[in-house]
Image 1 (tube, rainbow, N blue to C red):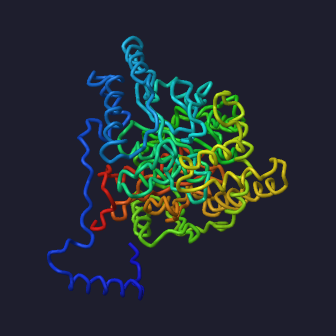
Image 2 (tube, one colour):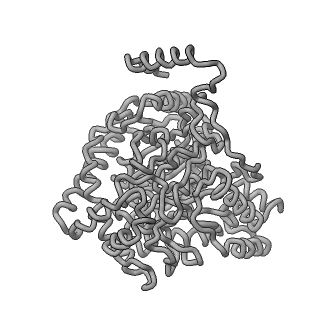
Image 3 (cartoon, rainbow, N blue to C red):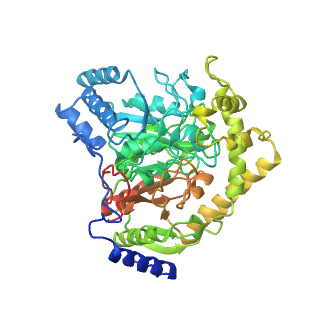
Length: 544
């Protein structure tokens, strides 16, 4: 592994630290005492996979009803008590009744498939036509019950899954303020990272990733516009799949931008994420983008879970400076590259992403334009009793309820978006064309074509930073934007830890290459087995 050269500043800091240690009275505690773990009761379903849960139901050890009861107790022990993760925002009051019906069906007909009776959590911006609300974690939509399920929710229910609860999230999917704290919402408070409670869970699918990591569900569903699946998955040491735009329907999801929005699975293993992805992927007549997925008839992604999946694969390593990673992640990337080579892959290290850092302003312009248009289209169809029906009314609501909605950060992104014109504006069309050219033809496509690659790998995000409600998030690096802006798939898998803080590795590919990426990510996961369950430490363990 590459060693970082000591700098004058680091040498001076080491000398000062050594001197301070020598002068310190012997009775004083160590400068970095080992952080305390929050007491959490043992959990029978700790790290249980979907296959484990199905086996338990098959043998009669468990039923869907008993699984629901177990996960509800787990949520109660973790969410507002114990480590107080604030990762769940609302429980489905009908979950036990649904489970009982599925148990009866299993007895009479057998299971529908791998998700029959499996409790899942979904992000609070995904419509569920039940007694749970869908609010994007904002008080502005409090009481809003969707008139019908999002298409992906219908798919999950048809597969026999139980929607157990809604997860907390960065309010409005982290598109209200540039100074927000990821995982904070007016409805749910600050979601905490199960690995170090003072660290960010990242956003905006914060609760979904934290819940999957903490074993509060079998798996979860998140959404992403740019980084909101892969970044919290990396921060919480779980697997996240950001699929190709249009593989999963966007209908029934509170939007940011139709050119980048997608839902995707978050789970503890690649296998479970693949099962969940397969259940959600389908053509939706109400979402034109899903028509493109018709050319991908094979969505049985579990067929591609091969231990030798890296053998003969051509992998490019993106080490772009534009990703802004600190030096502590370099050994993790080096170790991942070594593991991939040992599994028989041909590695090209590094490969140049020639357009890195060239499209950020254009992406911001696209998101602002589309947010206004897409959010207005969603809000106008909400029932009359809901407080807001447009972006303008949401801005006014936040101002009226500033003490609860904006105690820490404002809504400058809302205000900027409201000032944008229609989607026929030349500024929007030019920015959209620039984004697609720089991330597709001159970005991912060009990089893959130049080296005949099967995939590009990159560190997903730097170690999770401290929660800062005063100043908002600060950047530890991230590689999500190429795939997000292009609308191409990426999968993040646990790759290592820095002082016990998780870091993920992303596999990035061309459009509708999910099956191939799952094959590669699964082989990497099985070869390395990096993931460790969280210990709910109060802070990072600086002695590891």
